[in-house]
Image 1: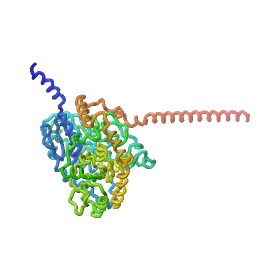
Image 2: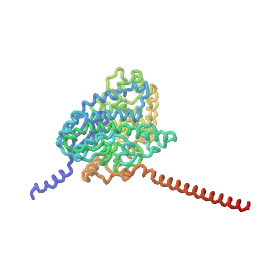
Image 3: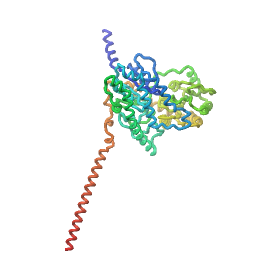
Image 4: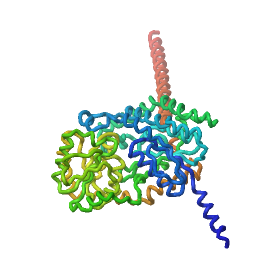
Length: 523
């Protein structure tokens, strides 16, 4: 048999399932670039072609094109300069929905008006099958799907959020579904339920208030490309509801067992590479030669540890110096007078550190990626939440039994010392994190395979409209049965009116009868 005839079906099948995917993750935050890279890695590994809009360029790959928006990093750092330990220690920074959405609108606008993005939108001749766009408090990136006339998927970087669920179904009841920045745990108290109801109402108000501004940003950014291509650009308010599916950076092991629509797919942990990267030689030696274990301390990338006041840093170093364990502290600058058991690293391969068997504790800010990774590798945590969803992430970890919380203030070092001793001396935290790690890993398929399955399913079914919730098309007044209440109210009014008429007739008849009898007596 001719070998070409054997290869032809294989090549045909390969070509059928090799798609061209547009992945849009321009947000300059480090954790968000990690999430974007996760999608790209899985798609490339499966043989798909990828165009990636990113501020952090990846190594060249024959099937990867990249749209560089790294020049936005300077603007991002300027927008987030308020995020410093010194500022947070001196005053509590309240980041309500209005502040967050205003800030994100500015960052989205900066990304979609970037010169490289505009050139790509106007000049690219490539044909795409699907757009995966990050959702982070805005739907503006759906414009990429509109320009290339393709289905789109939201890649939510958060746990289930009322705003994202509203795009595919409806928000959950705030009585058991707290806003993701609320530091509360279930069940909610009466006051907390009232507060969460207000949070939801306020969120709707904020989105309504920004609606016209977002629409203008959308039209200004994508309108010129639409005109050049000769297509009609839909309104943002229309296309944002036409998403095929939401990939959620969530899992029941890290969050709650919420009821979710069919087209919300939880894929927490997809960013974790199955192929564990080796530690740098110096860190490998440190971790291997730590008989009492290693404590890893990192407060993430948004808040630089170098902004800690000197007194605060000295307090932490004093606490660490009294431990028999080795401490690896991710700190952006060199530090003087460091205890022998403390190792300062300006960059840390977090996953590789957590994967080492000698890592016995993770002191973290409580970011969602960090809490996910600690369950992946089975390491208990002490959470020092700073802002956004970090508070509820840590609260949930404490409630689940594998963490302790220490609030950020000038007494943090002293409170941290107590928390460290409690976790290291009590095996229940490690036992609990191992149980949750089993739940985290015990899935029908890996998060990466989930991504590939649903990407291919959406493309092959031309948008997967069959997954859309019927609740999405039911008006609010029908969901609340306001029409039925209106009908009941009308019926009640009619009945009351009839009864009043009957009463009036009876009274009139009675008076006439009495008058008749009275006249008859006088005669």
